Image (cartoon, rainbow, N blue to C red; front, side):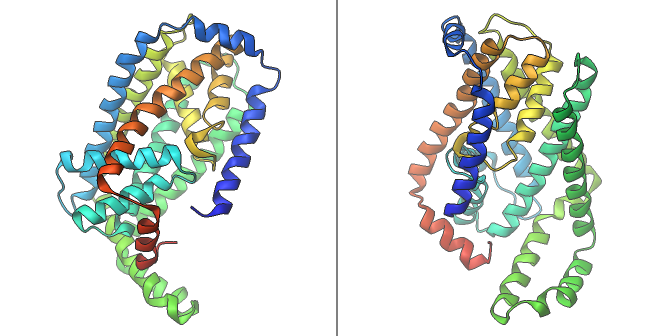
Length: 331
């Protein structure tokens, strides 16, 4: 990993952790953790892996215009990717799963990354949908939350419209790049950048069909509803109750926040917004902190463990990944 990315992430995580810990009574957090009925984590983990299965099906659907790949082949690749996101900064797991897919199926890293970016945009749109659906249930909407929703809405909608335009007119994008971009690059970068753009546009081909777009959106909604159901199961391990809409709002806000650079495992960027949302719904701060910490671990540990097992089986190293990225011209 590039060192500057790591340290930027660490600084962002440290900032959010300071916000979370400032004035927090750790004794009360410990007491809330002791009250936990942790058998409720079991159905939560089962539901979460159902969401991972739905993610695998969605990626299978996005990739099928490039190459039809069986779900049993894709599931370990998806798991390795989410493990990578959990332990490396800057969502490096996305590059990792694109590399593994190339090694297994011969699909270029840049084309795979295009499909992964489409996934992320639809994830962001569903998170915003969850936030908007839950907003009428919020007693009083904090200013910072309102600002986050407005900024995120503009970014995700803008990115989606750009990708739709690129997918609909790939020849025009190629011509524009040939006229406005390629001639101004150093000679040694021109051919690699042109090839990278061609492969990236190929990865966007699923956006040319309205039916495909509808299926990707539907699958994304299913994925995040299942993940919110995990929030609901874990909530039952603690002595508080909020509505499913409140947990949808929490899910939406924390996942929008984790798009920010952060340290490994989204430390801070997941926890601080989650605690804040629960407090809006009247959950006492130390209890909200205990729940959010347990939820974070329950989301992080199972998928990371399984992904690490699959990664060991693949005998992967970051040097191999970086060398492949350099060959394809991926920055």
